[in-house]
Image (tube, rainbow, N blue to C red; front, side):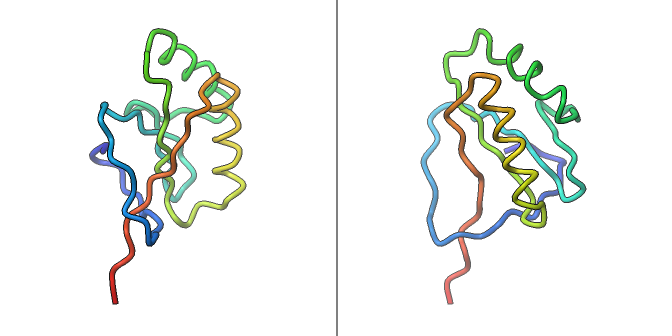
Length: 100
């Protein structure tokens, strides 16, 4: 995972998936800032940035790490831009819920 960006991830009952390759993580923090490869980007510049990054990558997969306080609409807009960049394998990063 990326270090240095504070994100309060949503909790789920699922344990998640095992990752074999180094994941590409796109972060949306509580202030709705989008970070790609440790650089803040605007929603408008996200698609061309991702196209450039993924042009020569074999693993065309993005994990979105969105703060749980970010509105669903913002996450949906980001996901739409990721798809518009030609990346259709998108995962959402969560943390497991604490067991009672």
